Length: 299
Ligand SMILES: Nc1ncnc2c1ncn2[C@@H]1O[C@H](COP(=O)(O)OP(=O)(O)OP(=O)(O)O)[C@@H](O)[C@H]1O
Image (cartoon, rainbow, N blue to C red; front, side, top):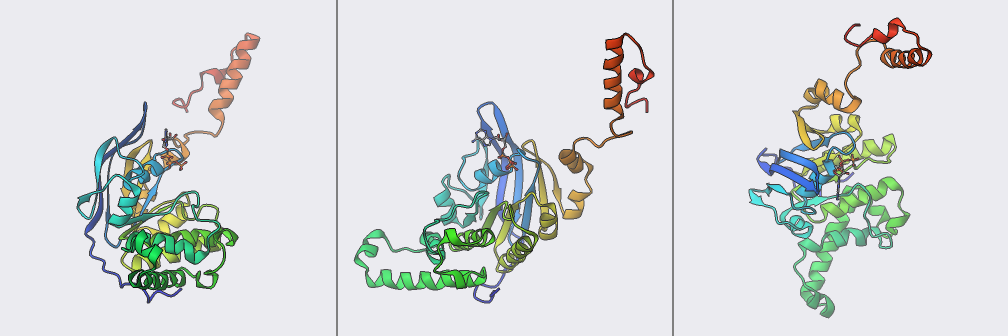
């Protein structure tokens, strides 16, 4: 991976993204409830939680896809504009849970599309192919090639996106997001469907991105990936932030284990269920068994 083409890291630790009291309701359902959340410059932060916990909804609130029902999201101390396009202009870029590439465009063209927020030339100069437009076009292509080298895709520049293997499509999504020169990159399940080698490569890529001074916020179900990668992890459960801290803090928190696995079992596995079945059978046959009186508290 070539990393020397990008700007060196400036890791100051200042707040970059600040969400305060973010709530998102869909009709009667509150998907995200009063979440406070910060990403500092130079950090890799993870957002985890069981299925349906509200992670993607929260992401969508951060990236302008949804306007939160309550609360504010600030990026570099300014309240974020409420549309994805303006959020990208402001310096936040994202990838999606389901890959969204232009399948029939080449790898290079996909990255060039990602550059459009950073080029000032308008439609008029593009149609007339003014000198200014040509200069901007050359600069854009140079930058796009740097990003393809950085993500290890330079040799595939002329391949159609749809012909790339799955892992490379995910990398291309990241290259395209980086093309908007973000200060913060948001990754929604970047390793979904990847094999262990691809997951490892993604981990290295995310570290390299952070080393270029870009903060990263990542949603992921792969716990090993998250705990290896992140400086800090926040856990959402039923729309609320349950715990936030280092990998060690989160891993050792019993509430997190309970949220993922259900309440920890006490007693003999299956004993309570067996007692219920026995009681039902006894009731059906008009008999009484000792097991009917056995409860978890008794044991
Ligand atoms: N557009 C929507 N309209 C109505 N309900 C929604 C909408 N989007 C999400 N929800 C609901 O909000 C809750 C949170 O969903 P969300 O997709 O944010 O969870 P998640 O943590 O990202 O889940 P997963 O890990 O399965 O992707 C769920 O109950 C979901 O059904």
